[in-house]
Image (cartoon, rainbow, N blue to C red):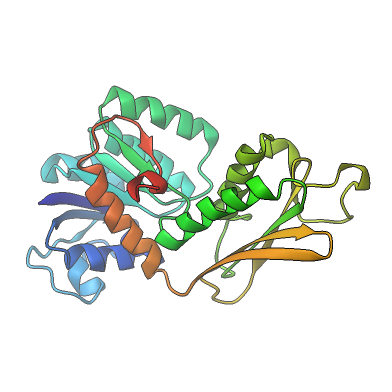
Length: 273
């Protein structure tokens, strides 16, 4: 049985992950920590049965909660500021982490990677844990390999509550395409447009456009547009609900407890891609 700590169980993603975890026969939710709904029973909050009647603890008492419950794995889909603080506490206690939070700083990622090795606590960090999106990543790279002279634009759309833009998924797509083309994504990425591309430097090796839409309750749409002379190809993924991300998180939890190497894994590795 995997002993699980859920960070941020009252959030949109945390609530779905909590319900799936409580109903999974391989997982025992031993603790949940948040900044709201303190003292409320987790099962009652997510409308499912919980024989252990785990209560939501104050995340400011995270170290004490860890010492009392001794979790194997922590899962965190909150916000960058909270994740960077709380996941560091977890890994220092040799807890394996599943992190789906986006907009994490590079300084944090560098530090966290060292802590993972130091405390023998492998982790999964991914901007998107949905199976379909990770197939989307792979296919975008495959297409880019054949269409290196075409123009490539990435368009993403999310609900108006999403804080970061562009999405972590869009950024990773651009990075993977750039890696395929042997380009430096940080040098060629063009975020939005107030003018067209440099006509002397056409093609994705020289420029990849990234565009963000924030509207309504869109769960998550991503398009990679490959534009050639007289034709185009559009590769598209649409998330119909957050369930696809939460299911991916559960798969990652079951993967990481068996991981042998102390490193940060990707969802592609979880899925064997």
